Length: 351
Image (cartoon, rainbow, N blue to C red; front, side):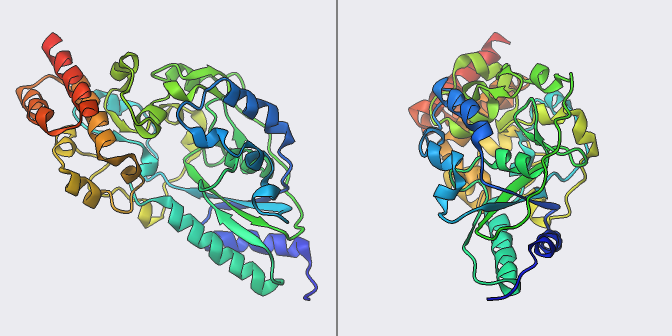
């Protein structure tokens, strides 16, 4: 077995991670006891809604070593994804344009990050010895933000996002579980202070309090995770957001320090950063699956896609064209989608 200087190895791991395109890598242990009560209370209050996977395997989430026996350290990485430095809510003024959350405008990040973590793991193996590892990115029952906060990548802000003092919150996280006894990094301090901009900006008042999100009221949950009819009380507030919501990040003062990504795979595809709602609504199911290949948008399916755009069209500026497009789709959709089209038409009738 090779003799390993674990301190030097940790320094090298961080350098190798940056060479692979990660903006930062840090190391922590697997003790998440400080997060147990808040997580279990969140589940008990049913703030996870239809996301049953959050309730399942709670012990695995709270004890990473049970997910991969032998794990004693987690190498957590950050990869920035936003393409612009603009942080504003001006998109609300362009009611006929679709708003898609920044993270979903380019290629799906899961495979990209996991592949690079696998490369990092193989590099570690060549410099040490055969070690037990497993790479993750939003792909298993893991409290990613808790681990990243413990490692010092940032702090969990009042909007429940992980915030980095020099990079804001526009980044993905990934983890490499390992059995190598690497030295751990120290967490940073929370720096939200008295600011409550994110809580005040939420269109649906989804924040029960600082760092407590009722997901069932969150537009990201409603447009991505929910598979049924969206409650009418939230439809006007959704505006032109058809996949996710970034408002709590767009108003966060720390995001003025974010830098545009250089990762080409995260560049917008099919004009997802500037496209008319009507253009998207008239996609056939075949066009939807073709145009969302390799995109996180595909996971919601065609019906939810049409449902979301129908609501946005109901909130758009009234025009003969929009009303005609909505009516033309009435007989072609499922009862669930039809309900939202009828709601949209009523909005324009009232206007």
